[in-house]
Amino acid sequence: MPLIAAPVITPPPTGEPPVGGGGGEIVLPDLGRATVTYYDPTGQAWPLTMQSLGWYTLADGVSGLGAASYELTTDPHPRGGARVRHAQAQPRSIIWPLRVMGDSHMEFVVRWRQLATAFTRTLREGPGVLEIARPDGTRRRIDVIYQEGWEGLGQHGSGWIADTAVMTLFCEDPYWVDAQAVTVHREQGAGSSFFTPYPTVSSSQVLGATTVTNPGNVIVWPEWTITGPASQVTFTRTDTGEAFTLNPNAEDVGHGNLLPGQKVTVRTDPPQVRYQDGSNWVGALSWPSAVLWGLSPGDNLVTFQLDGSGPGSAVDLTFNPRYETA
Image (cartoon, rainbow, N blue to C red; front, side, top):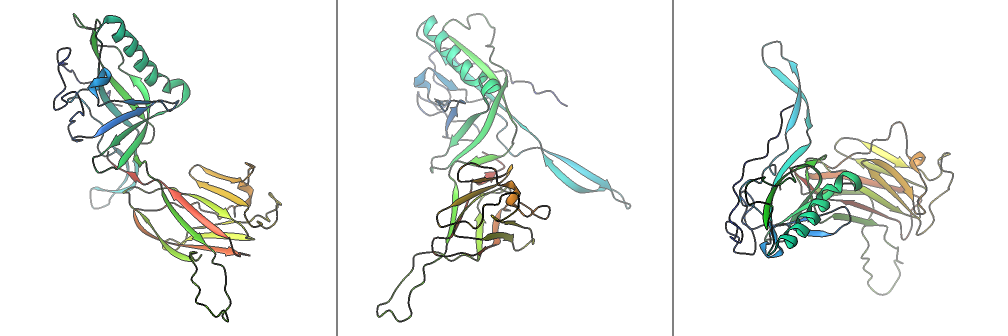
């Protein structure tokens, strides 16, 4: 496995604004005037592109924001060459150089220590989140774990009122995720009498065949929430034939039909089924034939079939689009 070496960076003198920064937004190669924020495992936000805070991202040295790398499994072709049988996305490493400053030695030390803790605590408390916001308001995120690099330059004069750390951030999932979730809601419409003397319009959406659009460029694994009444629910991806059925009357669950307002949530990655009280309902799925399918980029033809449905029966599908690049 190749070793990842942090780039050698010559920081600007203390107090000199980063390229294009002017004390405000940083102009980063391949990102432009993006706003970058790091969220530590506690949820605290650490802006990384505002020099006025006493730290900022260096304009040169950021890398690892492009398309994921892939490991290809191939089979030799009898006429020469090979055929790709499978492409496996590999973990991503992001190199992030951060300049930290202070008006006094202790002000610098406090900031240096706080930022070090914000990143290294991901090794103990779970991943942090690196978020890149574009001028059009879109935001893409990726989970990061600190790997190495918070050491300083070790040069004469560094570490007194300013120093630079060149971090390597490890990403278990190499794909960027849209911060804005996409939600699709389908609800059983309430019936109305044909003899009603006044026109009636239902705002409810009809369960059945529908098209779900994944605006990203990577397959996503949605979460489903089913609201009763229902005796059985089948989710089918029409183009592939993949399907799974949720049966609240299954022997492993023994709940009986979902009553009006009762909810069950199905996660497809990792597989998880929870009733509204948190109890495990994975036994309600139609194993071993169940396939918890994902949504490919673009339009996906899907069908929701609810047996025993009535007014209030609903299916909600939620996912965050995923992307190859930031």
